[in-house]
Each structure stands twice: as structure tokens, then as C-alpha cells.
Length: 425
Image (cartoon, rainbow, N blue to C red; front, side):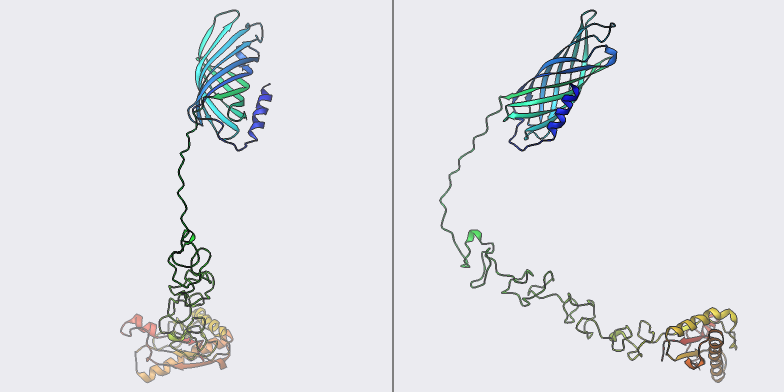
């Protein structure tokens, strides 16, 4: 029988039909029920049928209290005990889920007493705690519901456990009468007005102050054909593409003021006054990747490597020439290799090998020494890295182009150098 009750409960829970409120606030309930009482093994009582009745009151549509009485005439399980009458008295609190549905599940918890009276032996009266779940299914509006319930009973002080499962009916009555609705007199409807004369009555006009003669839509608002938020009669750029941000005149924004709208401008932060093309980008006449307004070497040949100023790339070799020396030791091959790589990166360019000295000594002598240093690096590139001599021109600048202070040993060492202009023509 327990399996049948559980199956019925699960089946009913599969259907929740919308309806008016079924579990009524302020209503009284009476619930006759029949079921089975399953006892813990150490009580030596067989599972037996019971009958019971519950009387309740719905505090709200969700919350209710209920007093329940049940009686079980339990048969003895073996010769160690006798047939026993078991009565329970409970006061339960119920919480109903979805009280406005035909199917109303609930949970319950409560306290009470359990009284056992065996045919032979002493009676027993214990404190009782119970909890469980159930469901009500209303079959006649909010008056009668089918009811199924499962409770776990725990009596103290032992404690002993038992299970009750039941099915029955719930009769609901005595709910408060509905509050009568007040009757409100409906005033006469005045004739519709059209204050701004746009052909849309004021009650429907979402733009009640439209200027006279302006074309409007069905809501009384001026037309905005390109949907940019500026009405057509105010829009100075009436065909702006969808989702483009516009100003109060309906025209796309031009944040950098270069005459190219932001949504078309591929270079949106062009400085004021810089000439731009139709894409909003500054001109780059020599195609070296540096805009004309930034290019300090504006006529760089095509394909030449340039720095951020638009000037040909110059590679400084870190060769520690000794004082009055033009010897390039093998330990500097890694530096020479950098020059070879730079030259190979720009095939077709004439490469300048520029030698320099510090300020020590006469200008004429330093000029010749710088030429020797440049020639030594050129020879090393030809012999050690297979760079054609025809691609390179060695030059000397003596002490005329220092990069550091010649007053210190460190500065003079930096000035004794060779630069390779591998990107220059």
C-alpha cells in the first residue's frame, strides 16, 4: 500500500494546472484519512491500517495549522508482544507551495503525543515529533481536495521510529467573503483634441508641440528617416548611416576636425592642420610609413628602412677600437654580423660604412684614422660575410661627429666607432 500512496503522490505532482486560488486564506479544513502505519522492527508490531482526522485553519494561502488524531489497531509481529492500540495526537504546521493551483504540494512538521495500549501489559505515553510531505488536489473548485500524506514519527525518550502513509479528502469551508469592488462613476468622454494641428489627437500624441506643417508619424512625432535621433526638419545630414553617432544637427561627428567623419576616419587623432586623404589619414608622400607632418627626411627612396623621424636607419657597431687603432678583432664578429644582416635586409641599397674617432690628435690624422676604421669593417664584411664590395662605400668623418663627451675616457671610447647606414641610398 505504501508504494501505491507514493506512486499517487508522484503522479499528482506531474500535473500543475493554472486556476484561481485553491488553498484559501482564512478557511477551516476537515480532513478524514485512511492509511498504513509501519513500525520500527524492535517494536514487534506488524504494519497495520489506521484511520484519522485532521482539523485545520489556513493562516494565509501558504501557511496553515492542523490538529490531527489517528488510531491504529496494530497486530503483534511475534509472540514477544501482543496486539496494541496506538493513538497519536499532533499539532502540525503546514507550508503549501503554489496555493493558487489545483495541485498544492506541502511540507509539514509538528509536535504531539503517542499513546500505546497493549492487550497485555502497561500502557505507554510518549512525546511525539513528526515531519513529512503531502499533496492536495482540488476536485471541486476550492471546496474539496484529494489528499495524500507521508509522515515520519519519532517518539521520545527512547526514541522509536515509525512511518504513516495516508490518503483521504480535505473539505475547506468558512473562507472570508470577497471584498466588494467599489463602483466608480465614469465621467463623460470629452471630444478628442488636436492642439498642435498635426492630425493626431492629443491623447495619442507623443510629441504634442510639433511645429505647424512638419510631417509626423502615427504617434504625432516628426519623422526621423535615418533614425539618428534628429528629426528630419532639423537634420542637416538626412542620410546618415544607421547607428552612426551624430551631433545636434544630425551630422556625423568629426572629432579631430580634419573634414572626415569619425565613422569613415581611419586616423581619428590627426593633429589639427595636418593635411589628410579621403580616409582621414595624413599624407606619406615618400611611402616610408612616417606621415609627412612628422617626416624629417621627406624624400627617402622607396624600400629604405627608416627610423621614427622618417630618416634612413643607421646601425652603430659596438667595436672597442683602441687608441690610434683600426684593428677589428674576431671577437667583434657578432657586431659585424648585425651589419651583414641589416645590409641583406635591404638588397639593392648602397650601404655607407662611416668611421669616427675621438678628439685626441690632429684633425688630419684623425680623418685618415676614421677612414681606415671604416675600410677595416668593410673588408671584414666582404671576407667574413660575403657582402659584395660593390654594395658598400666606406667613409671617414674624423672627430667631427661625436656621440659622447670627449672630455672623459668613457666618452672618447664611445666616439671611436663605426656606423653602418644600411638603409640609406
